[in-house]
Amino acid sequence: MENKRFCAVIPAYNVGRRIGNVVSGALRYIKDVVVVDDGSTDDTSKIAEESGAVVLRHGVNRGKGDALRTGFEYVLKNGFTNVITLDGDGQHDPSEIPKFIEKSGDYDIVVGAREFSPGKMPPIRILSNNITTSLVSFVTGRNVRDAYCGYRAIKTDVLRKIDLKYGGFMLEPELIIKALKKGYRMDSVPIKTIYGDEKSNIKGAKDTAEFIKMIVKSIFW
Image (cartoon, rainbow, N blue to C red):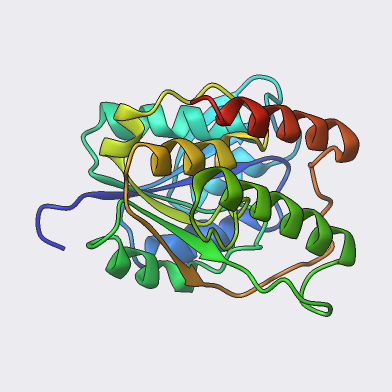
């Protein structure tokens, strides 16, 4: 990957038990790792820094979308050509980073595709992910496999050209929709489906309603 500068961006909120392993795992493949601590009240920042990451901290919890936006601002200011995003709670295995790096030579965005099946993913998440991914596929006219997966490789040129307006968990499907509508090339890579005892920060009915509003607006983007 000549002339490519990758940076890993890890949004994190109260994941002190797991963030060290995520950072050290990412550093095996990417020398620049940034953790955006989104207002954690535990030792997330301390452990991330001790593990070798640059830590950017929000004073209060602002949501995953704002954490990603802060990370994106950092990579754009510091001249990186590509960003790898992965979650800090252990749901994304850093050992799969090379698959994203390899494929990002041919595509502007590479999105992880989890397995939506019983035993791999909680039933309510299977339902919600299938619905949201089907809607994103419908409005883009593309076969999107996993609209909400936060494990991604993104060329920073995409971030410069797309105006991301949504916060929370809406930013991730918004990025896919706007990128595809602008003609950027996207593909996916299969990744492990990992669920532990972590609590989802998605707020059920509220986030679903926001997603539907975004989908309706996206028809006119």
